[in-house]
Image (cartoon, rainbow, N blue to C red):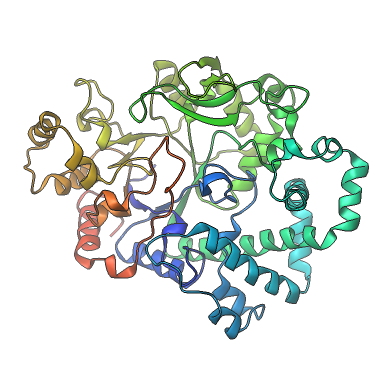
Length: 490
């Protein structure tokens, strides 16, 4: 990996006149800003269709795109919406996403655009090429709509169990709804392709994100139940999460169904290979969230309310990555190897030759062998000040106990006034091949601008920035450090 620098910002956090960041002109402006200040990586969270809590890590499909990211502005330029329809969009908050209102207002415009859309060759080619996931997704969303959003395990048995006659009846009676969901995925794909092309043309690579787990109430679990550890009724035998750690004393019970890796191995990991194949169409690099699950994963009894009573279960190991490479060739992957990481997890990551993550907010716990401490960081890694699960660095430092705070100052050779600045400089100067900083840390924003608090189910993922927050001196400093520490060509 070549030394580079970039910024983490999920697309929903972008400015936009439509209540949520999307793929309109403000996204192109954002990419131009990155390029102007020598940032060559834009890291995002998963861009799938969000479900519970609007978390990008709880998606209704591992293959589909998030319709909330579709830009009405671009639909206007295509002639699928008119100016009065665009102007009818209400004034929504600029500094956070009101997901419920955004969803209802955008859906209103999408149905209008869909009514004017004329199927063409590009649309048909997309539907044919992506049919292996698109048809199941369209069916899933249509049937879910018919059941007022009820999860698939509460549908009548014929639809829950994918009886062929029942699915044919859905096709006969609800073809318009099926076409609507295909249309949204086509539009998402076209708009994302334009955005990615612009980014790559400006020398910016997109680092995407692949959740380790799929969501239970998803097209994945409904259409491919054989891939998951379910009983005959489709009920999870175990659910995923992590044991007690830095983020939570009771651990995190995510509730996702765990995989039946033995069955997956027998069929050549087909579902995963298709999943990765789809995502590499959308991004330049993949960050695999919860990488440690490939070595072993924390399986929790479904009746447990917390993650405390789980057990470690072996994952597929290197065999999985060998199968990926055999089918797809070299995949540019980054491992999220945070949390309770054992030597076996480190060995797996090194054996498949992919870089891991180091986070400076984790560097000042434990002893001198802490792998996040700057003097231990190796070249085959990506360094962050914090991640989407962390407080902003300003907020983190403010809340540190005084004893730890003083250790940070001693270690970095700084004082309270310049500590955050020194942490940023330390990240850029580190041996790690890549340095990626959350936008909030570039702008020295405090805890009010945090994106997510793990273990909580409300109030997350809403934060957005506005362009009046952008300080040229802050971006200029990022560009200075990027050049000074050899993370750009010029």
